[in-house]
Each structure stands twice: as C-alpha cells, then as structure tokens.
Length: 155
Length: 120
Image (cartoon, rainbow over all chains, first blue to last red; front, side, top):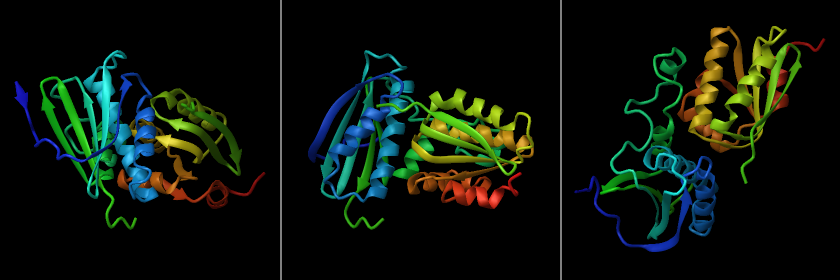
C-alpha cells in the first residue's frame, strides 16, 4: 500500500545524492555533504547553519527510528535546487513512523520539573530551523523533505 | 571527523567552570556528568559556567544533556550560565528557552567576571 501524506516534490536541479550507513554519528557526514552541495546556492551563513542542524536531526531520526540503527540499511539523501528553494530529501526504509521525538511540544519548564523527559527536541528543532518540512511514505520508503528558501535571504 | 567531547574543570572565585570541546551529542553524556560531579565535589560551586567556545556541534541529544545538567543544578540550588556559544547555538538556546534559565555570556572571561566572587 502506498501512503502519501504530501504530494511528490517538484522537479529541480539535483545538487547531490548520496547515502550514509545507519550508524550513530553519521548524521555529521550527511550535514557536511549537504553543506558542500549548497555552498553556491546563496544561503547566508546563518541559514546554512540552520539547514545543517535540520539535516542532522532528520538524518539522526532516520538512522535511529527509521532504519533502527542497522548499518547495512542506508539513509538516502538528495539535495535539489528548485528555483529559490533548496530541498533536502532524507529517506529511510522504516515505513510510516514519527519524524522525531514525542507528539507533544517540548516544554523546557515541564522537562525541568520532570513532567516531560529531557529528550524529544529533534522534531522541534527541525521545524524551527527550516522554512518547510513535508513527510511522505511510499511503502517502506519514508522521506522527510526539508525546504529552505535562498531568495531574498537577508539573515 | 568526529571530535569526541572533552571537559576541563576548574574553579574561579567560587564558580566552577566546565570548558567543553568537540561535539555535545549522545556520546558526551559520560563526560558531561563526570565534569559536573567533579565541579561540585568538595566545593560550594554556587554557579556552574558551561563554556562552549571550543564546541563545534550540539544536537538534540546534546540539548537534552544540557537540560539534565540544568535540572540537576536547579535541584541543588546551583545557577548555570553559559559562554562562548556561536550565534547559531545561541539561537537554539533561545528557541528551546534554555536562555530563559541559563544566562548566556559572550565569552568565558565575561561570564567569570560576572558570576565569580573575588579570587582567594
């Protein structure tokens, strides 16, 4: 069965496509390669740092929650430029699952009081770092798509 | 290449300074907890200064570790301040509201000058 929670992404110019093994720490490889791929795309340094954090969190989630840390199961990363949009698609083979963390919004005061657990910041960080996030699932392929606009970037 | 988190602990004027290097991620838990233990053992350490000047990566698990340190410090009536954060991680401290509970200083010298008492 195919479940699409969002429409397929539009065509664009592929800047990079690569895979990383599902091993702890490999999110750093992903963010470094994405950073290299978008180096000439017009993102300011501040927004590039935001994109890097979102890529790292989404990749870490794909490794841990999608591919369950199985090193032989790759996380695929594709970087597309579509006009002013930089789109990074991160795909695991875990089927339908939560992108990251708990469904509840993290609340630091509740965490400090022990009401919420200390973890659970991943999805929150992704949402706050990029201009758009879409999730789609096609059978086992679960893709988180991050969009960052470069046009008119003043920050 | 991954840069494992290390921590150096020293005391300045009654404040305990924990200088971190490398990556603050899930692998930093042991280092950070051991540094905290060292910082508060045998001294008042009313204030802990976490210096991030030599930290090049913090992920969501690292944020959770900082939350745990802050929670422990608050339960022991200790203040926590931070220094040396890059603009990006300063923004993340703001977004997560860590900066509501952890005063952030531009650099370690400024932090120490603000929180430490006179050197013995």
